[in-house]
Structure formats: structure tokens, C-alpha cells
Image 1 (cartoon, rainbow, N blue to C red):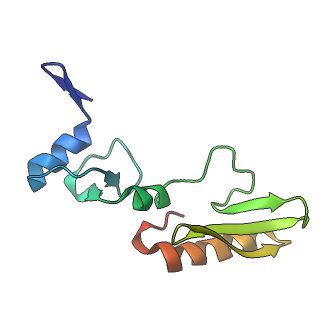
Image 2: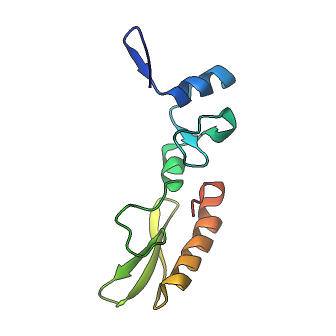
Length: 116
């Protein structure tokens, strides 16, 4: 954080402003490392795009993003957001296969914002 005369601003926002001459609403760290504030690692994004680029949640039990255990089906479920709606890509007995399917779905629908 940068503080000047009572104004608080995140360092990455100051760097983006300095290099690009404007300040977007949302700035993403491409490599998801908040300490890496090199201008090459910063990009303007929408809030939705920024959410797609997140890492797996800390409470993730499968070890794969977008893969969770479905108790009713007794299988691993692949669930990915596609155009703002949650879409099921299948149920799998093998967690590694479910992880691969989730990765392919993110590549297809999230493009450059797919975080693996």
C-alpha cells in the first residue's frame, strides 16, 4: 500500500497508472503473485475475468480447481462457470480424470484467464 496525504493506493495500481496513463476499475496480476508488480504482469480486466483467474480455494479437497465430491452421485463432479452460469461437465470415479476435464473446460471457456 502507498499512502500520501491520507490517500491510500495499492502499489500495483500506482504502477499501472504510471505506465499506462489511466487507472482501470480492476487490475489483475497475470501470474497471481500479488508481490509481482512488474508492469508486464499487470492487465486491465473485468471483475468476472479477475474471478476466473483465481487459484483453487483453500478448502478444496480434490486438489483440482472446479472439481468437488458429489455425495448423491458418489463421484467427483466437474463444475465450471460458463458465461456466468454454472455448467456440469460430468461425474467421474477418478479424480485425476476429473481434473483433466476441468482444465480442458477452463481452457475452452476461460481462455487466457484460465488458472490451473
